[in-house]
Image 1: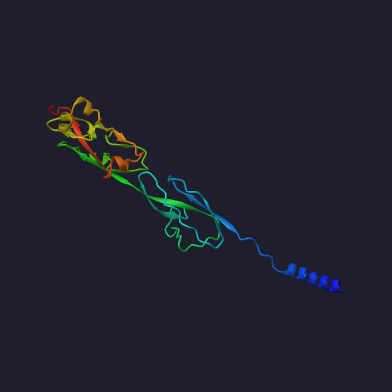
Image 2 (image 1 turned 45 degrees about the vertical axis):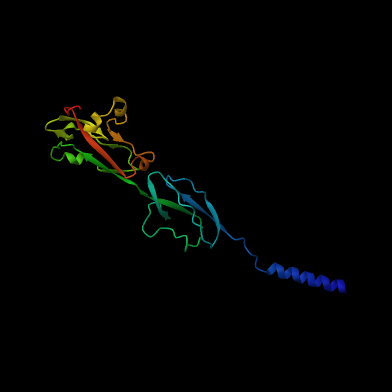
Length: 206
């Protein structure tokens, strides 16, 4: 009789457990960080209805990190807030960058330009520019000096100072035809300014 009662109780317990709602395993979601050319940040897996811990800010050449966005075009209102956003699905976050802008200063050294020629000169560039030309292909847009004549090119040193250098020192100041915004230009131009000096054909040698 006792065995019969135990069997009945055990069977009842099994039936009770069978009708209890089964707990589903907690969902997990993947957070992908697309750094747009910055250093790599591994994806994160987080439980549903939890927040994401903000990763260390990525680094990119000649750029300043400007936040994470849920849209690739960084639409207004889509900046991701790690402090308040609860994760309910897998998402990709896109790094936004504020590009370093470099200015170009042209020292005409007494030369003048034809009317409208100034529009042929780039006054600034960023890391995303492929190549920047300093010398217009149209020679009519080059400066001309009333006394020293035809323009010969740009250097990062005045012609007077250049003429006082030794032959070996002069190799450090080639003509600057163009610049390709690659590499860490901020180390070469910490003030974000490229300063160029016009050189002329008949400038007196020292």
